[in-house]
Image 1: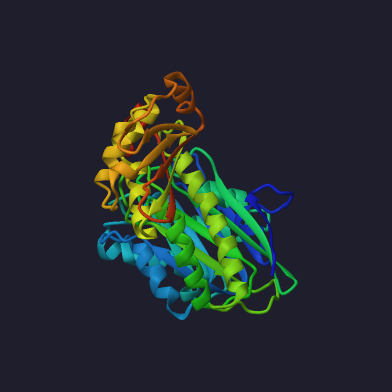
Image 2: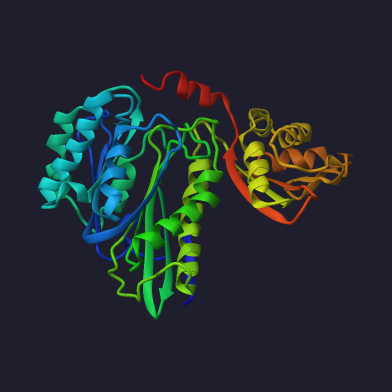
Length: 409
């Protein structure tokens, strides 16, 4: 099995995002939850699909997550309905009723059982869903389902996002071409384990539900759980994968070479989405990539990378193009990773700024220019082992405060 070109959406495929694989349709439309914006998306598979999901670790979990988790118990789904503008979180028994009602209405118009429908919501916490508007919009969303609907669906799940987020990959399994498509939303309330992000991934691969869950768990650990914008973990986070088998490949099972290549392709798709989410952080002017090597183990490498990427002082220094490497060292020191500062080396871009216990001479103007690039890279060698990890974040600007100071208005 050979992995083919894996890149951001746009390598000549006519179908966008979740509609790239065979057998998937989507739609996105405005039903009146948000003012003059698309706010209702529907994703449909031509046949029951193996399904897997990971959810927020926040103890406060929104009603849609609870309904989707229940519907996932048999390992299969055939459609997902998503609204933006309202999180349906902290809404009590009525919220659960409304989330189930979304599934019931979608199922009716698709001719499916309600337990074949996943539900997701994103937006303001603590407000009941406008169910009449959703009920009126879902019939039109079902009628609008199309293989060309991936772009509209990706737009409909956005909240404070400034751009649609999609990614595609292709690979071969036993001589059969397999495609993975996706869409995501996320801009603020982003932090590991997970963040205010929704990701929906589709594939025409034939794969068992346990293998799909294992592949998603591994991909999630390396990607979505390695992004941070503002240190807040949401109530509504969900990454959901549907695999309908339309590629007619030999079924992928855990412990096989096919599984490893599929998991690699899935991880690359998730990484693309994760980078897009971090780069589109609320008020962000740049993507911040923190790469750690030389940790004792992967867990400690991830701790170090995430702590630096999530440090408010590091993020504000990046925004101000201030080469204040002391903030990076301070963040490393409180990360929980084990290392000796006398063995650490640190680079901003390709310029060494710290080595073996103290700062080194460098060109301040050169580093200032590097900190003004669209992507700022911080490389760290802990000198304690050989484990690596990468985390993604963004700078912290005045605009972030403005956006979140008036989020409900």
